[in-house]
Length: 524
Length: 81
Image (tube, rainbow over all chains, first blue to last red; front, side):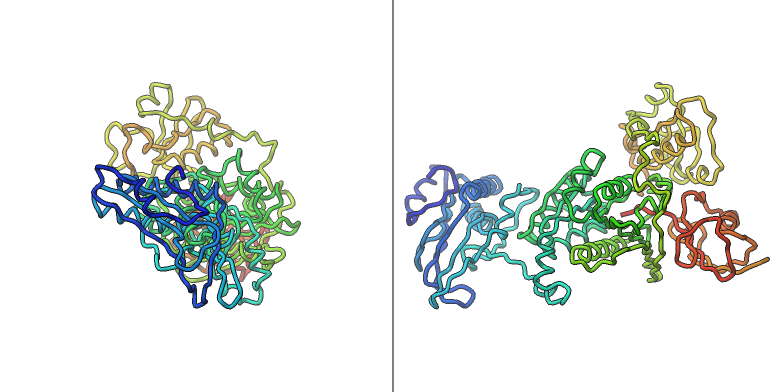
């Protein structure tokens, strides 16, 4: 033996293992022994065989022991698991912990055995008295251990130690397989599918939960944001301890617990021009769940290029829109419907909209449903409608849209696309921006300016609503810096003004809230 | 000649119009003229280029003829999630 977790082909000797934990500072020792018993789930068991993918299993096992030592502050800990043939009564697994006090010793010991049973890929073949035999765990069940385990919170130590030595996590899909349209063949299709989910927020959470629960074989979660307190009311996959942590990784961790038999990959960055094509190419279905037009059109274009179906949804207060794109000559893409790709911040701006959690929840559930229909071959051949739901009046409306013959279905390669980076500038203070020669324009609405401290006062005020009404304009010449609360509306207006032929317009990146002397503006 | 159409607003237009539906008596001959008229009446902020119009459950052109009894939906794109 070496290390803190290992496998043994020969019978275990607890006395010897315990001696290795001795420490003059330790006030106690707690040990656990798992034994082979003569029954499992109602069947009489005669003997057992254990197998493990050792390289992987040892790594995960050592990680668990290290977590226990760190979390509970114990002196030493170790775990050894048998492999090979075992008889009834044999010692299958041993865990030992030495610690200054008994409480930590018991807690760490329990943590180790619970986590080993959940996370270490070990297979158990039971030989029954009736002459039959069966592998109780399976490769798919052990798969989560092959992924980087997101240690983003303390694991609960509520494992059921009365169960057999391996957890045998086999999802039960019987309720969905009972549908004639699903059955064994449909479940196999779901199992073989790879779905890319872009955005793990209000829409993405239900999409991810339903698709993971349904057994979609591979889910890729793309989100560059961290969990914020203001997310929780509509993103109940997360909890209060997750605030500040990367959404993609927290989501992946939770989903692995929901369905350990599937593969979940976390991409903790937003979809962008550099990564979107590779992500889309690797997926069978793309689900767009972000809250911004930039990402929606980026994903639309990538789906069109790759010939992949994409499911789009978005919400505004009590309403939602749902559109499914399929690579077919009849089906409109997002750009067919919205030829003037909207600018973020100009339509229904972030400071004024609000949302009740079940609205994105409903739309996200519809996206999950459309995705499963695509996987199962139950989707309309040529979806040509935008579905609009109004959850206040509980009315739905399907509006047919034609493929636009003038649509390039992709961003116009000839259009001089101005990179976002080129339109945004960062400053630590408004004073620094003025010193750099910018003329500042505050485009927030009047009520947002009511409580500005003096150093955040911007003389020139042209509210976004005035711009949209055509009541605001600027004379060409000076270099303008457009300012709003978070930098979304200002970037949208900057893009529009550039298109209108005013080149010397810039947006303050992150808005007032990003200034070093800024303040939290009124909550969006 | 005056005609009556049924108008539905969505998203920020609904907020600004202060209603989700209304019957409108109008002389407008196209959805574009109708929107211009309603934009003035309700002080709607969004310019027409940012919207789509659907007539009788089908997205259509702003310049198509408007007929009495048409169900006209003005809809902006939304991005929330």
